[in-house]
Length: 232
Image (tube, rainbow, N blue to C red; front, side, top):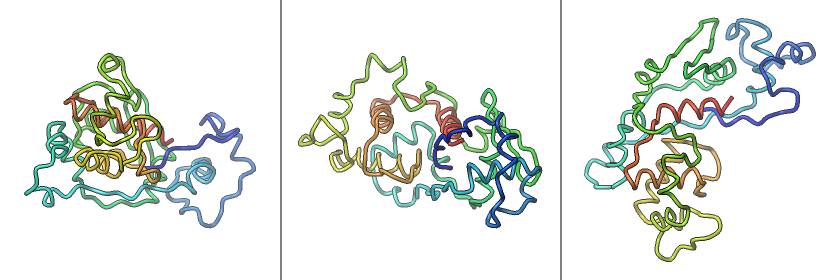
């Protein structure tokens, strides 16, 4: 998955592409022009995506957990996430960045182009490719109305932390109880991967962990598409 974008002055909208293409040279390190349908596409990639990093893909090895009884694995199974988290496919970082560079998401449909080949991935095809369920609430990283009367930061921390943990201030993985620490590890490295602050429990991490512990169903297909949109 591509890292989240950082907004730059004068480059916040794709409608500005035409004006940006007039003065920007194309470094020799940029991928072959054959990956793009136009010079405009290639320069847009140069400006916003060429220096972006791709989070190294990781997957869950169910053989390792086959003789163990971790609660988080059962939670993943209950949410039908094991097929998605176990996907083992080749990843071509250069093509991933070009895909994101040309990506638009319209009403849940992904539209992009690589090597001049247009790709249209509607929601049903996305579910099939990612092997994700659309059941549950459309969570987007912040507390949603369906959960706001049940969730509190203090209670969620008490649910996932050791008895000795500080219930105020920044929450780190070292303060988590054993099962919750494994759950957090798998969330930030496989399910919702990021490349930094892996030992920190963010607000999103805490809500996701609370939802797993409480058995709340999440529309994971929606959340993954939302995070793809954030990466643009």
